[in-house]
Image 1 (cartoon, rainbow, N blue to C red):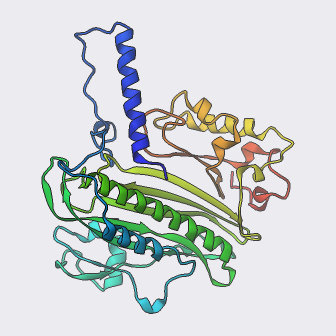
Image 2 (tube, rainbow, N blue to C red):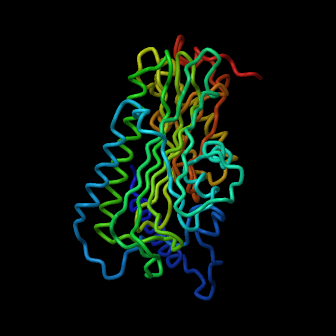
Image 3 (cartoon, rainbow, N blue to C red):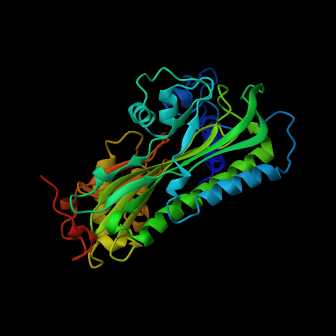
Length: 385
């Protein structure tokens, strides 16, 4: 998982370089750049105006064995390669002061209606502190083809009490200990067409992500205490996986996973898009080169199609010529869909200011003559013109 510190250090380095260039070019000492902040550039997003991390004043580095033990238990709960025992009952959440059903539903990537149906509620406003709500299961069978496999979203949820007081960016204590939350939903093939290898792989990817996040979160608390960029609550460290199945047929499964996470002391939420496409006959992941005829110059053709589509996307600039250039490594993050080949690019690789990944779709017909005969794309029907 890419570290937020790596991201912020890159921003700081860029800022220093910009200052050097301004001085070297003899900029007007009286002129001042118009005030702009990251928060203004991304109004309504999760970005903030701060770049550096936040630390609790007076905190000294220390080991927190109880916190590490709790994090280990959470990580272990995500390691199992089979769904949990139905007798364990559904996942629940306890209503706390300041909660609304809308906030709770958003936290679990569900809708208010789903929560109301799961809990037999007639009025979303009648919540009580301490009330236990059932978190509705999320099924995605509607993404399957008529004769394809059913897909079920399996939840992995942890709530970890750090045992460390939470502080806001102003240095004032928020109240109560800092909480680390993990929402690690993952898609699973269900029914008679279940593919154990694919299910194990998908679960393994989420499990590894959770372990990496918790290791970073615990290290951040031990290093600088539990500091929040948001002073409104003490649950400002979390990880969320939001998978979307773009294709589910008897032959192929392609999943796009939007991962968001915030570490203690971090100045902004990090966002990544992770992609996986599987051949269900073998249970193995498919690489970008498996889609194309190796005797064709497919990297150049794919690059030209991608650059054309990136030209009109927000936050892309001339760097797209390099970031989407004819190097197969630029296209490793892809998905298959009925509409075409979906390509995802990380922030900074194809443009300047965006904090979210950019995705474009290249219709299959654009690359006719380059696809591998009998390969994965040949299994898909031609999209409607």
